[in-house]
Every structure is written in structure tokens, then in C-alpha cells.
Image (cartoon, rainbow, N blue to C red; front, side):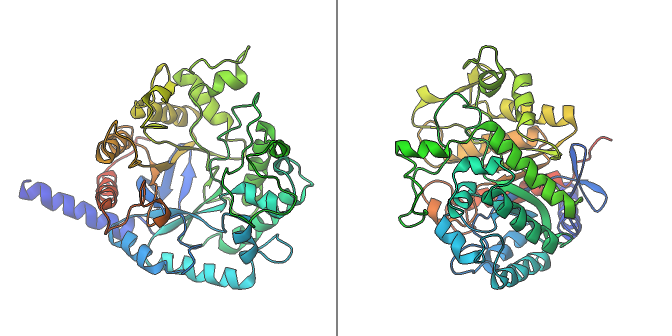
Length: 409
């Protein structure tokens, strides 16, 4: 590289590192802003940053800061019901005072390291209804214990952290949309593997027929998501609110809105319309998780998007970005990554295709799955010291590239 170009690149990186992350993230139309300027950036999913047992989050946040990683998305409260019991109060409608004090310290540490936090509050939303002794449809009912607890917990956290310099956004759940486009099936949206002793006594094994009482339908989910966003907006009208939704199935629009319903692959426009339909008012954003293929060991099972193989990652991403621009709603690619399993492509080849698509489509906000999560050592876990460290370095380089992007008015 020529000296002049190298000097310009280093100067851009220094400006990016010193200025880009200060202050909260905001949304205007389809753009994100920081310090009055359009913002583009790639973060990571630091899933258990706060919920890890040893609470040693400092080393991880330090490493993210050193690598110019602007933010991370995290599970804020817990996952299984037995985890939730340890952090929620006796009424199960708020965090214990000592947990809040630890969270204060956590957020302050992130602030001091200039790293933002997207707080996902109900990552495993099924666990919260289990904890209340209710079935999943309770999420759709305003007078249910589950819904009341959601409103109470959300209110407590938003009132406490609204305006905190490290807070970049609020998120409802993780991939709660995954099965609501299967309205004519008996699929139950509950984890298929639950640790023993984690469920209330009256909760059936999700793999047994009695679990059909937990069948969640589209309207239940969308009502819960809207109620979450409404609760956040009562106290915070600045930070973005995200759903945490997954990518729609390749035929979601035709399954839900088709007359008659069919498994016909959606067009790009239908895909965009369905993506938006999963983000009810007052949400002003669109969220999607997208990996390069659903099962790399079984190419015959790869579903078709727009009549083409799902390996066309860039085309799916382009359809989402087109909908973002069309509706003037900011898009968040909340998860992307490269599964180590499979033999169709190496993880590096997959990762290169994914990150190239993010840059080519000028995705404004995205997050790598997953940083320092040892439970996925064999598939996704990325640290600065393991053999996937190249992914962290790539995210750092992507942020340097994006710092030079200029948005059109």
C-alpha cells in the first residue's frame, strides 16, 4: 500500500476510534445517528456478558474496545426459568436490588471503555411464561401474569438506564418470529431441550403432546411485541427498539397472506412486506438474523429464497435493505456468522461471503454471532485468542471501512 493511502487510512481509523462511539444511538428514518452524524457499524453478540456465572466481563469488554468493536448485543436477564429465579424478585416482576447494582457497574464499565450495549430483555421469552405458571398464549393477553411481569420488568430497566451513555438500544426477545409464519401447523415455540428442574411442575415436556397448550400464534406474538415497544416508549423516545426477529421463511408471505396459503417462494417484494409485518407499531426498525444456509450438511434441505438457493446471502440481505429504504425504517442485522459444521464451504469461505454481502449492501448496523461463548466452541464461538480470531479482526476492519462511508440525504 502506498504511504499516502496508508496515512489516510490510519487517520480515518484514529478519528473513528476516538469519536464514533460517544453518546447514545438514535434512529431517523432508515438511518442510525451518533453525534449528529449518520452511523454505520458492526458489533458482536456477547450473549452472556452479564449473565455469565463468574461475572468476569471486564476482559471481554476490554478486548472489544481494543478492536474498535462499537457495541454488543446481550441477554440481559437470563435464559432458563431456574436462571431467572436467581435474578428476579419474589414477585417475579423485577430484578433484585443486588442484581441492579451489578448491572449498574456493568453498564458503567462499558461506558468507560466506549462500548455500547443493546439490552435484550426477554431472550428466551418462553421461560418467563413458564416462571409465571402460564402457557405461551398468555403473552398475547394484556391481563395475564406474564404480560404484566413483562411490562413491570421493562419499566424498571428502561427508567433506570434511559439516557445511560452505554445504552444503544432495547430488544424484546430472540427470534420470537421463528414459527409465527407456520399458522396452520401445531408447532410449539418452546426450546426442545430444557434442563431438568427448570420448568414449573405444570409445564409439559415440549416434546410431548401436552405441550400443544403452549402453541403460540402470530397475533399473540405481535401483541406482546407491540406492548413491549409501547412500554419502552413511555420512558425512552430516543434509543432504538428492536424486535430480535429472525429471517422470515422463504415462503412466509404466501403461507400467511396467500389465498390460498402455499409453500410458494416469496418474491423479493413479498419478503420485504412480510419482514415489515412482523414489526408492529410503534417499532421504527426492522430486525433480521441471517446465516448463509440452514443445514450445510444437507444441501437437499436448503430452502429457496426467491426461487434461488439460500446460499445467495447477498440477495436476501438486499431484499431486507430495499424494504428498509422503502419504508424508511432502520434495519438491524442482529446476528450473522459462519457455522463450523458442514462441508459445502469452509467457515472462512462462508464468513467471507457474509461479510462481503454486508459491505456490498451497505448494511448500517449488524452484529456477529458470537463472542466468547464457550458453549458453542465447536460451531460459532469467536475470541481474540482462538482459531476464529480472524473474524474479530475482520469486524474491526469492517468498522474502519464503514467509518468512511457517507450517506446521501
